Amino acid sequence: MIAGKSSANASAAQSTSGQIHDLLMGRIQRGELGQDVRLVDTAVAAEFGVSRMPARDALMRLAHEGYLEPTTRGFMLPRLDHQEILEIFDLRRLLEPRAAAMAALSLSEEELKGLDDIQAEAHSAMAADDFERLHRACETFRNSWIAAVPNVSLRKALQRYMTQVQAVRLMTFADKANHPLIVAGNTQLYQAFCRRDAVAASDRILRFVFEGEAAYLQAHGEIRNQNQNSSAQAG
Amino acid sequence: MIAGKSSANASAAQSTSGQIHDLLMGRIQRGELGQDVRLVDTAVAAEFGVSRMPARDALMRLAHEGYLEPTTRGFMLPRLDHQEILEIFDLRRLLEPRAAAMAALSLSEEELKGLDDIQAEAHSAMAADDFERLHRACETFRNSWIAAVPNVSLRKALQRYMTQVQAVRLMTFADKANHPLIVAGNTQLYQAFCRRDAVAASDRILRFVFEGEAAYLQAHGEIRNQNQNSSAQAG
DNA sequence: ATCGGAAAAACTGTATACGAATATTTCCTT
DNA sequence: AAGGAAATATTCGTATACAGTTTTTCCGAT
Image (tube, rainbow over all chains, first blue to last red):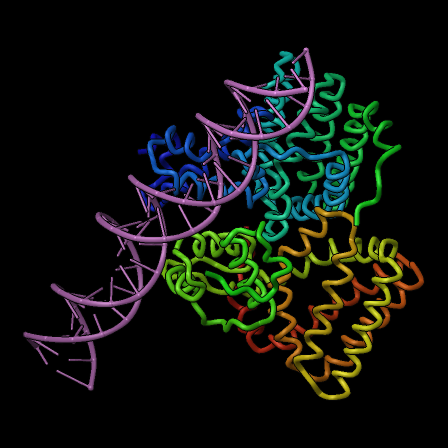
């Protein structure tokens, strides 16, 4: 049977497939799976000491949620093409400003304190040149304020492409020059949250997404030139 | 084995669970399932002459997609509470104006002709007092222009809460006074599409969603007064 | 007639097995 | 050495069965 780490959420009420789902999602979100990894239901079942059925259920659920992509030979991390990535930036500009505005009004003092702590950790990690700590701090910061958005449907819509956002972020994160920009932007967002300034929070996130897109395009520059010759408008 | 109606999409490449999924989704989207219906995997399997596994896979997929809600005793149509419905209106205001603007630029002449035909059918159905034809025409109109949105991520985000939108529409559709308003709004949207006027299309859809929310609130009026006393901000 | 508890029925989650489909590897011919 | 065909391996989809959980029904007591 399964040896789960988080026994708090892998309680008696959680089915086997639910537990496997959560464990695999944790791995995906922490970037522990390489782009070339194939998750095969027989192998996952063997790893967790269960039958194929709950493993298959968990993999299929992750695929429906957008974290994995089914192939004829197992499930893999999604490979977004250039066009899909640009579309997600487009979608983020529609959703995230409103989400940030709502978060500015909804974040509790305790949650604000938590964001402050995360920012302190981000500064510390940047000073120490610790890429992983910095990346984790930035992800935690983002996940924390999004968790405070009161509109559940909006939150779910945001969380649904979180894996893609993270994949792009890893790409742009590779350029160390982006680090101070990202941390400074988070600091400004945090300050807007503290002031309960919904407009400033909204504007800052909008800038963030534009800047993120610009950084992505720069990182993708040479391939983008090639794609421009061949790209056709979808639909 | 399965006796599918649409053999064009239920081709040899489609798995059994995929076929069952499509057939059940068709029923859901046409409103053929009552609010109290429970879909149990053994019963669905028996209906389609297959084993529980493909039936269960199809039901689980529909649940992941938001069309069904799992209970301990089968799957049911989702029951949205008042707050969730308002949140979806909020989300629609974020997504649909942009979608309509994109559709205005992307719809082909053939697709525009199709919209014109659907509008003619809507007028005819309204004149004949044919509620079902009118409802179907309105749904087809909406599905058609959304299908023309080139941003796949945005389209998927819109399609994900389509069932909820349809449930609310059935509620507001019950008031016959709303019919001419809806058809007139669709006509104006169609005209904006013809003019390739992205701004007008965007604005019209925004009005549509506001009007839809107002109609929903009116239909929900007395219960809303009661809820106002007890509602707590989620999050 | 009502209520509570026990038993039966209904349903889900999971285990195992089998066949089909797909991908990979191997072998043979040119 | 390369390409194509055949064989093999891998993986998936589905069937059947069993155990556990939840719901419903029935029966006895009050």
